[in-house]
Amino acid sequence: MTSPTLHDVPTSRFAAVTLKMIIDNPIEAETPSGRMKQIGLLTILYHMLSNRIELTANNVVQWTGVTRAALRQIIDPLIARGLIAEDRGQPNPKGGGFVLTYRISDRLLDQIGNPNGAGRKAHRA
Image (tube, rainbow, N blue to C red; front, side, top):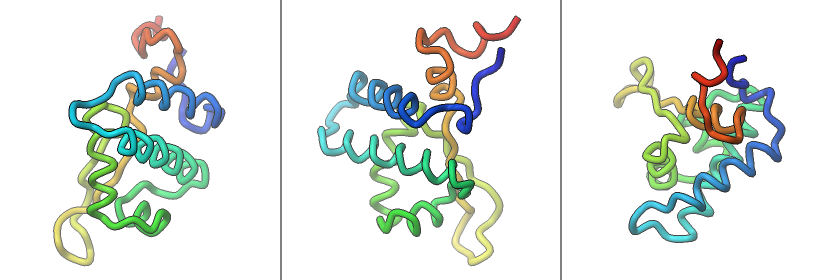
């Protein structure tokens, strides 16, 4: 059995697992409001994916109304925790670097698919 895709995961399961992973694993100098913002952003990313919206930095900024700097501030701890993966894609057609895309990490998908945390390897024969 392989890990689920995000479309196989009920919203309540996604919310419960992400909440636990953030609250139970605080990062040094992180504030409670910072953790709340991370939980909120993960929920938004889940809904964007459910609506088949690509998780580019531009799309997240447009969808949420936050600035790129605010997005960076919220998403960096999620990347550090291994809940979100960041990919630098094609050069930005408007200039100024590369298109940043995000995805729900395999680690998080594994946790959602296996509440005991055994991971992807435990699912394979």
